[in-house]
Amino acid sequence: MEHIAALLFVVGCSSTMADCRELEVPVSVFETAQACVAERPFALGALQGQAPRIIGKCLAVDPALEDDYDRIVWNVRPDGTLAASLEVSGMLVASNGGRSEKDYVRQQ
Image (tube, rainbow, N blue to C red; front, side):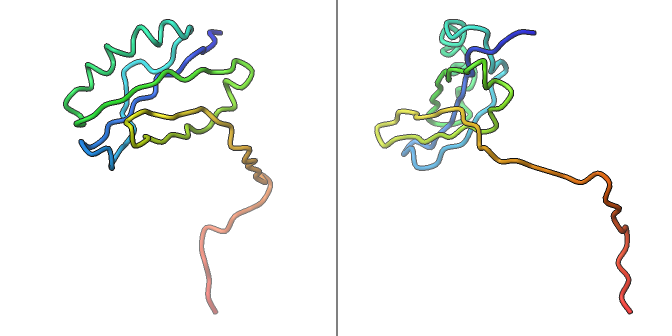
């Protein structure tokens, strides 16, 4: 199994940087941080035209938490820099598979 060392995260913003949204890149995970840094300018260039300002950052992936990361927390600062990190929310979801569900509602 390959381990992921870095994730390329890209956002597109309005010219005033007031409105930003995540953009998809063709390749977003990398086995080394160096591979992510090398691909970053090409990925940003390929996204030109999708937003007036495009910013990307390589985020380090901790191999011990690789399968636990479930969100990216990010913010574009007023100076135009992207602050982003991978995080584990700590949310636990439980379900009861033995519980029977009604497939209708009856009112009397």
